[in-house]
Amino acid sequence: MFQYKIPISLYIHMPWCVHKCPYCDFNSHTVKKIPDYEAYIDNLIKDLQQDVVMCPDRSIHSIFIGGGTPSLFSAELIAKLLTKVKQVIPINKDAEITIEANPNSVDVDRFNGYQQAGINRISIGVQSFQANKLKNLGRIHNPEEAINAGTLAHNLNLRSFNLDLMHGLPNQSIDDALYDLKQAIEIAPPHLSWYQLTIEPNTLFGSKPPVLPDDDNLWEIYQQGHQLLTDHGYQQYETSAYAKPDFQCQHNLNYWRFGDYLGIGCGAHGKITRSNGEIIRTIKTRHPRGYLEGRYLDRSYIVAKEELPFEFFMNRFRLFEIVPKHEFEQRTFLPLQAVNRQINFAIEKNYLIESEYGWQVTEQGKLFLNSLLEIFL
Ligand SMILES: C[S@@+](CC[C@H](N)C(=O)[O-])C[C@H]1O[C@@H](n2cnc3c(N)ncnc32)[C@H](O)[C@@H]1O
Ligand SMILES: C[S@@+](CC[C@H](N)C(=O)[O-])C[C@H]1O[C@@H](n2cnc3c(N)ncnc32)[C@H](O)[C@@H]1O
Ligand code: SF4
Image 1 (spheres, helix red, strand yellow):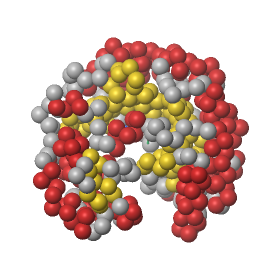
Image 2 (tube, protein in one colour):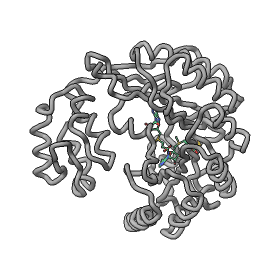
Image 3 (cartoon, helix red, strand yellow):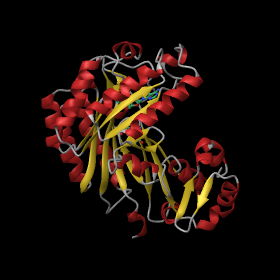
Image 4 (cartoon, helix red, strand yellow):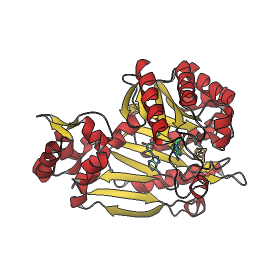
């Protein structure tokens, strides 16, 4: 049937961390007394069982176990989780299955165990390879542990692995930022996420903002870092994501291409297209307490038809690739005529180029992405 051409992924949220980082706005709770991780896995499966009713006859295209700190979960528990997921919904044979890991909570046995459990991609939250930067970021690992975790992932010969780095850090010079990238390049991950530090309102940094590099320095860091990555064969495919050819994160691609995804676990969100074209968004209970009491779904709603063009392009234009026109029709269930006027206006503004096959955002469009998106509001 028509809608089954839309791939569906699975996001699984693990909500605990040993320590809350002062910049982090993700749904993560400090471990005070060791949580019942096993009970959490059982609840994840019950949560999934309730969700799959909305997507019969479909199979999972990719899985992303994110957090929080998923690597607090033992390999045995991750194996149990993936085995049970498979009993509830089929997983495609070639599915990319990622787990996020913090450098201080890993060792060779744990990584081996994850691989045996079916994980084929590990994403390591390095942030920086400089001790003073890690300290300022409130991280509990040191540069050696970061290098060690990256090397372990490299030696496993997984399908892929990723390092998360941040730039634009307090007291960071251009050379400091380039040092971090050079160190990462030495470990040779097929995928590199390179985020500019943002100050989020509901965080410690939000209430006591640190001094960050000024705009000129931020621009230089970005320009020189981008060039360094490009020179080493990393292609930018999204604002903060770089990958060697064919190593883009399949889970992220599906998300930005307005694919479907189930979201289970605390605070996870999901998007499911029904056979009648309705798009349902689900949001799960944020706090582990309520979640572990069996209240999984916080709320869900059907996306209004009028909002679909904006939602589609907001995701789609983040990727630096052509947007196929047929995907717009397939994923929104709207005819192309529904956006004719807006597309023509965007072309006039030099934000978009149109071909018979699709639309490509221009350099001008990338620079004024918000103005481009507003056209579809
Ligand atoms: C959800 S976190 C999970 C990764 C893992 N818990 C860790 O921290 O090592 C994913 C990534 O988002 C990035 N991130 C989190 N907060 C950020 C912020 N305020 N600005 C930029 N990047 C941020 C970090 O690079 C982090 O590794
Ligand atoms: C931002 S990416 C992390 C990229 C990572 N550095 C990597 O390449 O492995 C994490 C993925 O998890 C998804 N994600 C994060 N938090 C989520 C949530 N609460 N609910 C559903 N999906 C979520 C994002 O949409 C994205 O596709
Ligand atoms: S950045 Fe990672 S380790 Fe730090 S609080 Fe957020 S999720 Fe936890």
